[in-house]
Image 1 (cartoon, rainbow, N blue to C red):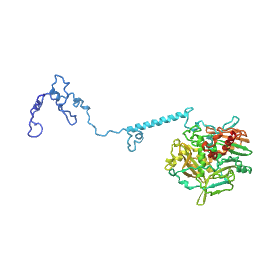
Image 2 (tube, rainbow, N blue to C red; image 1 turned 120 degrees about the horizontal axis):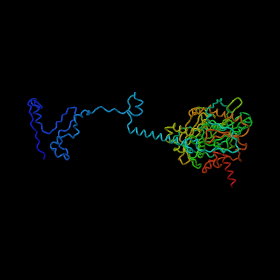
Image 3 (spheres, one colour; image 1 turned 30 degrees about the horizontal axis):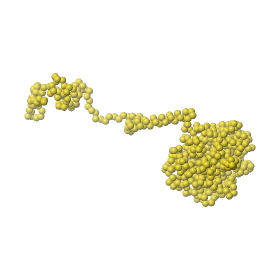
Image 4 (cartoon, rainbow, N blue to C red; image 1 turned 90 degrees about the vertical axis):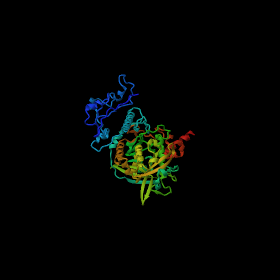
Length: 566
């Protein structure tokens, strides 16, 4: 046990606190306990311990007394030597300055103070930027890699719309870059003749929304005609009367006018007869169908039997467009008739609601152009009659477009239309050009979707939007002067050719068109140049009744094949 602790003599001060002033310094120092180090301190110095009774004494040397170790702080860090006190500093209670990192601090030093990002947010931001950079490098790599599926649809291996025969002679090759510089102003056209009959538009369809959608009906008994220029009896009659020198249809003219926006291959047959020029289409041509996702960056399946392939979607889009144009009408027998009946219908035959406007444009002093233009309906408000064109956009799978119409049409219809303008720029431009050629007062665009993404026979109408053709043309950057400049340049080029038959073909892989001189019997019934079998020009096999709506000529060939096999 440790020996007793002697306090020693404590001087008594009767006059106040602390030791008396009369006490001698030597006496006070002599009265202090032995071997107790003096630990001076002031307010600016660190405070240590006076005695530590809990210190471990196992490592003490034998010569060192145990009682002294209690007061020995030589090994204690609390009491640094006096010569090291100069390194001691008081703790600064001021807040440490915040680091000015990040782009905002670098460029906004003279503006109001901004809080920097936290370190974890900065790390996440760097990760996102690195991921974007990696994705960008991958896209560039895939774009420049030979033989890869590049995002640009132009680089895909599309087939030509017509097989180029060895005996065909290529006369000229025109890149699309030259079309963008063309401009030509035409005066207002004059109407020569109006044929057919129109039914009134049912305005209740303007209130259709995704929540109260309408089922798309099928009109199997109504006949739709896709007659080319030279087979039109009215155009033949006008040509014999020398009413013009150039003849075409609105579908052919719109294809030429919007050629720079096209990606898929197409072809137009040109016949030079005397001083007259006829623009025709082949039987079963791609012009009778409607392209889907033509200008999209997302590639479609290449298998032709796939319901989402380019060809299957084109047939489906034409089928949807025709049925839509008849469903939104008031079918009560009340029609608006014109000068002559439908020139292609037989007596007693039920035909679709359509009116043909034969119009003439003046290209120059010695050249006029006549085109057959179509309108599908008429609307009468406050005793003012207006012509309408009816077209339908169809949604087949939201995975390809990235926009679900059923969710976005009510709240973000502009986003849906913007997506369609990106994926179907050529089709919408052609519809707008046809409405401008026919001088339609309004365009009705329907949004039609599949009931189920894997069911390409049943559809529903989700919404209908109305536009003025000129306003919509300016919205999609469709220049009327440039459209007519393209037509005028091709007409001038063809008028320099000799009499004969020619074909204008859009290159399937390059933004350019080529002009070929073909034999006089090309594209006749006994001339085989189709890249596709004839049976594939009709509707899908399970919809035999609807096949005639797309291509009557294809049905005739198919019937002949069946009789021959029997």
